Image (cartoon, rainbow, N blue to C red; front, side, top):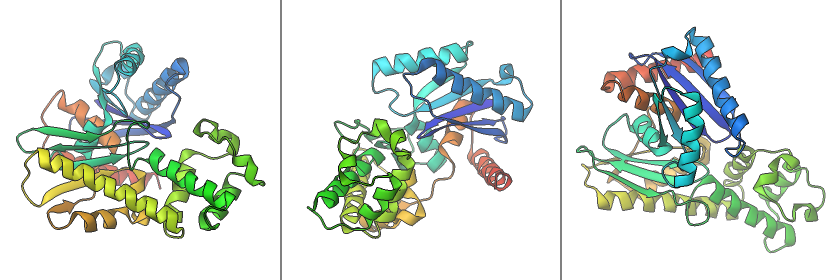
Length: 321
């Protein structure tokens, strides 16, 4: 049995598959701050225990696990912290921690040549060609990059909000959406806002992203931010294409909430990229890519394995409706 874990935004996702890529269980746990070591480890252990219970399996029957982690491989101290956490859980060391972009590429393109852009709190793109050459672009973190990432988009949206508050911009739909959402009665209450204090406003980061997507249709300033973000995705994709040769049309896929159909991002990206590229819907979810990465450490996989897992995802979605 093979376990995929994805530290995916507000949730930790778990999926358990067998060697035939049949899904034996799926579980979600609330994300815990990495610095809260005991509760973070507890959330991981809870997710594993629950998914094993659903599959009627014991922990010892998991042959290998892959954990897809944002920012992994970019900071030595962070990597050491993550490794310590998971060594306490998988005491037999039958696991690997990887940057989430590896699972994203396998999940989105099913192991075929092409480029994948992954947008979560940050933004990163990876491309692999048919001879295994790999190029990665972006993922430099909040302070130095992550252009087009959710944090980048929301920060720019809140800049627009403050300008609508103090009169530099006319008050539009964004202002009238955020005021009640944040339970703000006076404009001055927004002073010294911090993402660390979202709970005090009774909202999650996903709530803000939802407002961003809706406001991109109604507020011209937010619409401009979205256009700028899509331009950044295009730059990342073209930078990879210039470094590695691909057969045309070049397959491009994507992962992240910002690519939801209602955002219009996919259509904008297609229009910007033009006929040299073929933008494709991702085959699988990120966590399924992590499970496939775990399986790859024990056996080769092929298109039929990918197709089986896709059918299993569809079956699981119908069950959970």
